[in-house]
Image (tube, rainbow, N blue to C red; front, top):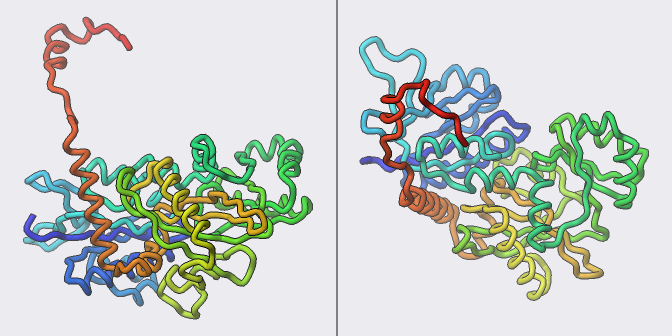
Amino acid sequence: MSVKQIVVAFGGISPEHEVSVLTAHQAIAALKESGKSVTPLYVSKTGRWYTGDVLLDLSRYTDLPKLEKEALPCTLHRNSDGLPVLLQTGKSGLFSKPLEWPVYAMILAFHGADGENGSFQGICESFNIAYTGSGVSGSALGMDKALAKQIARQAGLPVVDWVEFREDEWVSDQKQLEDKITSLGYPVFVKPVSLGSSIGITKVTEQKFLEDAVELAFRYDGRVIIEKAVEPLLEINCSVMGNATTAKASVCEQPRGKNESLSYEDKYLSEPGSTKGMASADRIIPAPISDTLTKEIQDLAVAVFRALRASGLARLDFLVQPETGKVYFNEINTIPGSFSFYLWQHSGMSFDQLLNQLVEIALDERRRKNGRIRSYETNLLSKKAASGIKGMKLRK
């Protein structure tokens, strides 16, 4: 492959669609400034795939229907050499072939839903494409707040108590579930299980407000998790980069919002009209905590990263009770807004260096996978063909 074409994939069917667009364009700008060849892969809110130079202009996203008409529909395909390419679909010139864009590696800039839960990662795996971030299992675990807490607890890592249930369980056993939630002790946080960016989250201080909060969370997800609130609360975040053997932690940050818990507006709209995504949020870096607490959180971040089979880069959020000094793992974000580059800046790494490092990790992960035996040579089918379908015995 003569041109090392980096594909930046973003958008998707998700309430975090716009956040993904911001993160992607930050990455595209950094890659182009460093001389990289970049191809955008935009997944619309209806799930259609597009590419084309028009997608490189952030101002065009104010009118999505018009943008989709001007962009080029595409799909993943293998060319005559068996290499993955983005292939133009739909109409092309009368005497011209559909356009192809080679795929050297993919930077995944999705947030939420199918782009972050392992589904898109599975597509990349099926085409043997190197892609940034966690693999299929790590992405799926990271998206599921309840399962991530369960695995962390089994690994001996500290988490707050929680109650989790499906919508049908809430309908049939609401009273019993309310009793379990009451046993946690108010206040509690009500969250959709598989969503980020603080969307659909409510802090509930009394039981009379619980039902409305649960119904709000169910608008976004079929499962809800309710967690015991830590009070007083100090939120501390830390990023981890690498794989199971090379994972290292960034400096810690203390995010700050207008309320006790960060809202969507705190995270992405702290500067009016800002296009900086999470980079525009209000935070203190490094976090104003002791060296001992910093080290504890960094060590916990790496431990959780490994336990959840994460790779590439992630941001891990922790809850600290200042009076007791207790630290609890809250959640992992396997594709954090702005790739948490602001944390690595304080470690002396520029945004383009961070992206290059993520691509190298992705390429290394693919090399490891391709170095394993991926097929088994056998003449099983020829033997079965000789004996005929009637001669086959169904065994397990």
